[in-house]
Length: 132
Length: 133
Image 1: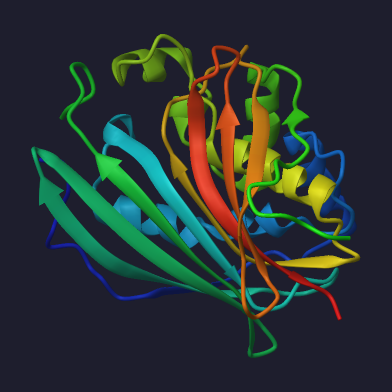
Image 2: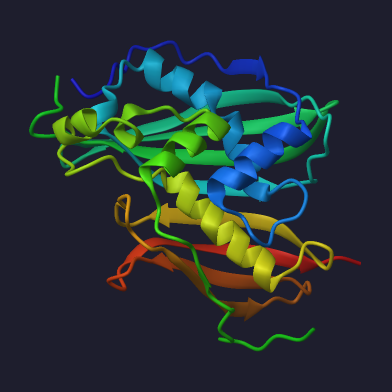
């Protein structure tokens, strides 16, 4: 079974860690950023805890999982000391040719103002050794 | 600053990705999927070694956008990527792009992609960028 389709689909809400200079510098260093000052737009990838929780609810074997698409819509930039509030929702699953395509979207707010929407899409496919 | 249709962006080459970098990225991003960190796990998933986080490569593209569109003059509104081919430690990733459209609202749409050292596209995507007023 690639995915548990009877999973709890209730949106997941959580408060992410406060955006600090140290956390931003850690991220920028890991990506080897050279031309990005301040908080990089892709810092939003640090707010994916809800996605991972959904994959857990779906009983996904991570050996079968590949990230296929990522979309960001930026509404306004993040600032240091922001405390992001993240809501992550299940969007869809679709089965095709023995694979399952999963889409999950999130919105990130700070003080009730949306800063970014993002959607992550994955494919679950059977692997020779990795299939349960 | 002016742009023309199909104008190529300045490309950006990053140093070869290392396994140590994947550990750093996992720590910084919270993406601790062992397929990026554990060779044995990756082998069971059918890969010869751990694979690079797709979002790390997307970060490279983001840096290329900032190189070409400095954040003090431009604002990124949309940024989309499709992960086309798996990247492995040791791969050297080059980010490239070109102006795809000059939009009526004054924004730009750029096509973006990353290539590995064999010239294969590993990511493809696009971004919409607006001038800061």
